[in-house]
Image 1 (cartoon, one colour):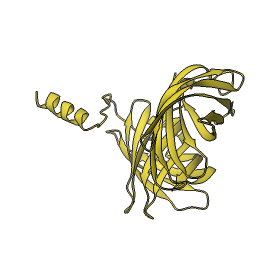
Image 2: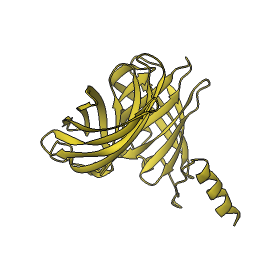
Image 3: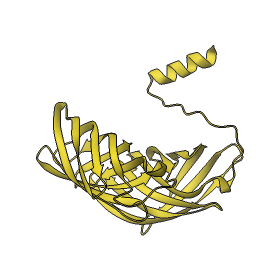
Image 4: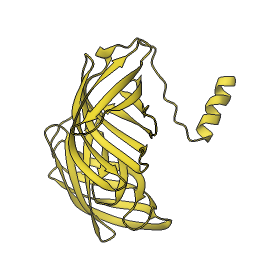
Length: 247
């Protein structure tokens, strides 16, 4: 009864609780490509968002790339490297260093095919998660179908404006997309059609360009969950916006 009450209370606070299998973990538990997303505040302090892809070698080594928005200043496709160490209880730590930048440290919890992340450097308040890429067809043709999406964040092009959206998009397998989007930009609610193009790279990263509310929007993305889902980050100056898409 106490457990039920606790879970109910956490749900009321917006906390997501994911069931963790009873398995023993080791560094070998993490192996293969993962897409990841992080959101929070860095030590400047400014709002920050990151989407990227990271490969775990099963022995404690990490490599990959990331796109970062720090207060709307975009840095795309930066190479990253690092290391990780997992305990038997599926908790652990990781260190990730972008090319030319400083190392960031994280606490990890492995849950099935994903792992939760929180930065542990003083002055930073940032968290997120990574999901396994799985067996995906990394091509325009492989990412075909109807997807739902939700996202949001901030826009700092003029002043600090909160933004949120959700909708549905269809991809035709040839690099074209269309759909509908509903959202709120600083409390101004809108509903509109969207259209554009997408390009998937052989490593399951890619780019999107689409028209919404008369403006052209650009994003980088990484495919996860066997091609059923993706994380994306807007790459237009002033945007600190990430989106989750699912088939």
